[in-house]
Length: 96
Image (cartoon, rainbow, N blue to C red; front, side):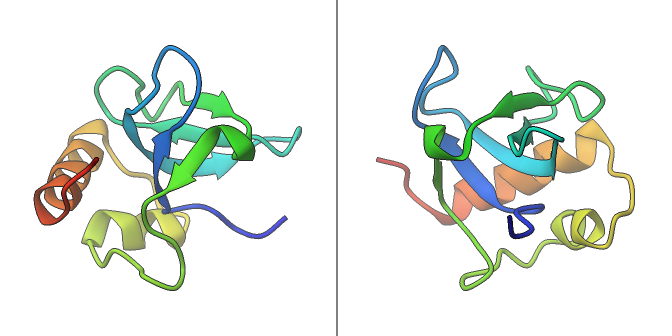
C-alpha cells in the first residue's frame, strides 16, 4: 500500500459523508486514519477504508501547506494547524 499521509480526502460513506479530512496515517488493517482537527482530533483519528473516501488531493496535485509537509515528514501536528490547513484548502476549491 502506498503512502497516503497528507492527502486531503472527502468521506464518501458513513455518518461523516461529505466531510473533508486529512489522512494522518494508515493502521495495521490498511485503513486510512482521518482527522479534521475539530470533530476528529489528530490524537484519535477516524479509521476508514480506502474505498469509502474520495481523494481531493494526492501526490500528483500536492497541496503545498506547511502542515501537510510536516505530516509527510513524520513530524507531529496540532489540531489547530490541521484545521488551518484544511480551511486554506477549502478556500482554494469549491466542493460539489
